Length: 271
Image (tube, rainbow, N blue to C red; front, side):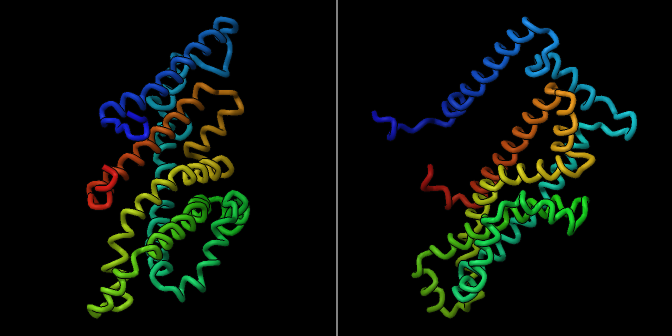
């Protein structure tokens, strides 16, 4: 059987997917052990025991100044900013994307504006956002929204615009207005695509969040990473990066399961 025609079962897929991760971990342990055998004070590739020791202080012991458990406080702050940014972006993509996709005159007027905003590097706008909104939470959330909302809007608008014209004609034949076509025809078919667009935006959203926290924040996962880098504290940086990756994977998994659960009809062709 040719590989292109070979379907992997779910259980086997999990095992196969775990193999590269395990190999990378083993490679890291091998290289780290060799570096420490040569230089026991090496900070570039800390041993697991060193990472556990460093992280235990952040996870299990309250900070002397603030009284907070820094790891959990950083996680809560970052997830709050990320959640608000994703929520605003998703709502904007749904509302604006539907209007642009279903109403050609509106798309002709505002489509170029959305495209123009989408091609601007969001990081370049960060100084402007800090000047306009200050160094508080608003600027950080705004960076996430500006970074991913235009992409999501364009994706939803393109998806709606590509719907079979026959569906719209049939709805109008049955007496549907433009508003009813938008709500009853376009909206149900946009929802699975919206979740997919949100999944694809998770990576950039994390990048914008970490960038904003690294520049102007006093708490957060990105803030902690860039704070301890001054001391070459890789025993903190690596676990934090791994934690961010784990959070991203969990969020992506929850979005995927939600999409399959709420819109099974949209995934039948992929089974």
